[in-house]
Length: 217
Image: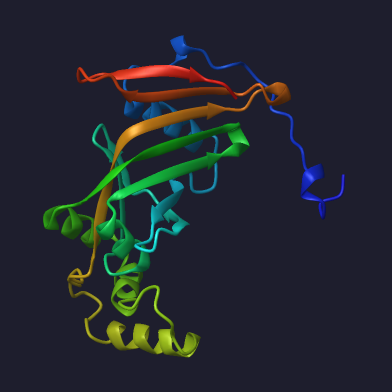
């Protein structure tokens, strides 16, 4: 096998198949089960998800962000609201996210609309962050914009670090906050032998519940 030829990089997926009877009726309940199992498997950052949005120009763009919470209403993540992703989400409040848990032959895809979190939610999470991350949020006000060099970033960090004493509470920047990705479609993928993967898609059934369909691999 030649690692310089990606076409030759193949990994067989072995294990028990996934059946409809294995799945919860609500997609976020099922997500909770799989997230717990991914964490128990000691995956590196199981909360890392590839978030895709659409630029005002129509160009799709994806990046990895960290999911910081979830419940039946959806997934929560935080960012600079004036960043490239923030501007894209404000212009077109639709997004999709993929959790690539390939080490346990699974992935989860979530697509839907995004809504901004409340100031109270933003303040509560920001206060829970380590001081260094809080300073970093202030230093990266111009996120996604060109900078001269690393020295400029380090200088900004030091300047903001000097603003607040070590024991002083650091306020949340007005341009920093979170979003909730509200699921409208959720797919659970489990790798199977010979590319016979198991895929199940949840979509609203129109009566307040969810329809679950098996998809061809």
